[in-house]
Image 1 (tube, rainbow, N blue to C red):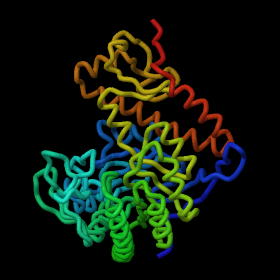
Image 2 (tube, rainbow, N blue to C red):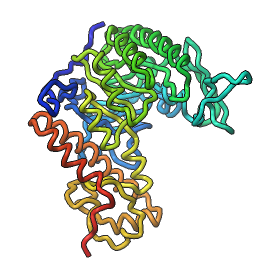
Image 3 (cartoon, rainbow, N blue to C red):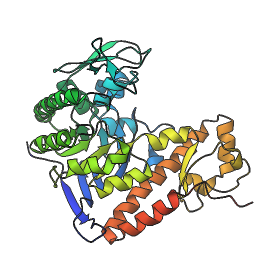
Image 4 (cartoon, helix red, strand yellow):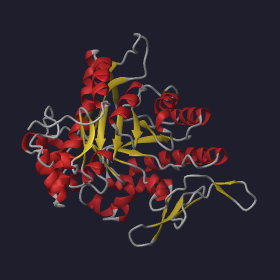
Length: 414
């Protein structure tokens, strides 16, 4: 199976000294439109970005939406989404769509990992890293994962084949292979065994993906990305990347446990090994500083729930950093969240009004704050792309981070 989701490199990022760099701008061609990269892909977990209309997401510049296979499998069911004509038609989104494999959710949701390694009765390190007071909701074996629904306690089984069947039915343009997502708390020995298991699952995903592609006649082609694990170990990350690069994936996801202060180093290990002609997606990363790090080390697309999640808790991004709209200083701030922002929220509403909505627990508060945050992050990555093309990336980076890292927030005018 050859890659059938074309990717074109439009420009390359030169390093500060003018030498070669992993960074690039490109274009991913999908059946529902092009994705110009680097790009931030907002997360619409249950076929919706919480509190925001799909039309609003298009207006603020989002090129694609990522939904969650685990959640859609449990509710309303992937068969129903398929019967509706696929994810995009079901949710009224005309552009490209992504789905994750469900691997992270089936392994982690509701478990609550410990902060330290557990010890067994002989005093040896254990990989049973479940927090006190929590039940293990997922059991992993070489064939797949048996897990308990967080909705009603019913038991379910995901294998690589089932994940592919669920994602094909959901109908996203880009899917991810089923993988085992470990944590930094797992032992080195477990990470090694998990890597072998994830490689085996990747091969099974490809076989089932090819079978379903041939069987679902008349359906648009769905790209399949392999997921690179390996935690914080260079040899494991590089081995996983080389092994996956040898398989006919349409692109690659970089996932799993990693330390944020080593993000660039770990991503560079992976991208130095991956096929250059395939897109690379960094799973679960979306803070402004991290986006620059990812791009500089060869990441093409990102997804993260952070912009919408923090918005629902009254935190918003600005050129001068993140701040909380619930703070008392915003009660009489009759100015936009950011006076240079062109989003719908900043064009029409003040911090004082948003402060009032959050204090009053009004649902509109989440909508307006989410529109702003998604616009901010989507727009930032779009500016990064253009700066790579124009040769101005390092100037943009220095200017943005120089302001964003300043303490405090811009003061409202009286």
